[in-house]
Image 1 (cartoon, rainbow, N blue to C red):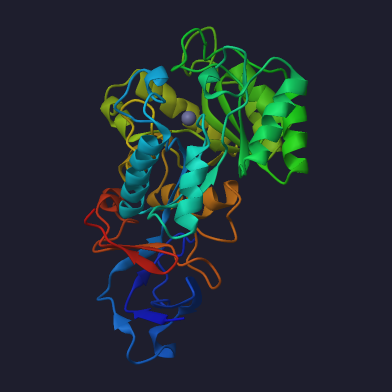
Image 2 (tube, protein in one colour; image 1 turned 90 degrees about the horizontal axis):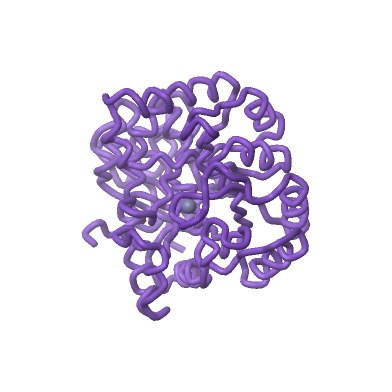
Length: 392
Ligand SMILES: [Zn+2]
């Protein structure tokens, strides 16, 4: 297998506070880094990268490949035939990788088509990110996204839905712990399952070697999910009777920390419209200050596929996320690389520029650790050591 040696790089390894000037060369063999260190230790004929900045490939912890962000009505999503949907998903996957998203976690659809895309990418038939997929989310009768087929009326049927995802080859389990916005008749504040049912779901997932991602808007549901020991809490919107974001609860936050649960806040690029407007912006920023003071572990995610949220927009969402959560560039990038990889079960595979890790990385003319806006324009994208054409 070909060996690639690159030198004269500025390398941010995915976890450090800053770029280590003593490390400026990598060797890639069979898709992995086999050396990360000084140019003085590599072959003289290594490719000179002219001082480009290298960071690990970005990871979006929450996408829906099957959803067309231009469609407002979720019931219109599945109307086209499966082959057409697969074609559209293949285009999205290619756009994501070209934008620098080398890994993504898909948190749900109705027909397991994203698992088909995952497998085609893994077989080299399609170009796209490394995907981990949940299949159908477990939800309540007429609950959030029930039209995807994962509705369950009690614990026993919830576990049947879970087994169905396992049989289809899901990489993790998604559960809707509360209602959501895009489903008529479902209210974000309402819990859909009690803690006992969520605990049973986590136990069954764990038996199958799978993690659990829980969709949680309402504070009550956030608490149930945290005490049940899910792996990630999606959204974490602190919705209560007072309204969106207005029911932050220190005890629930303490339960999240005690259980070591990651928070995936799905701040998308569209939130830019709130910057400088006060109101919602101030409320959200206050919540992130309190969450982070309590020790919250945040990962980058966008909920790509919901109306107006494009699949390839994580790079432009990261500076917006950093604004709302008051993250330094290094903190924001960690949330989108090494920390995100750890939360989705790939912490020893990708998200770091380190010996043995998959050679998933981006190259930039400027330094994203100085200005996160730079993320929008990678000079080169590599997945598993292979350069990705950026024209498409
Ligand atoms: Zn979602």
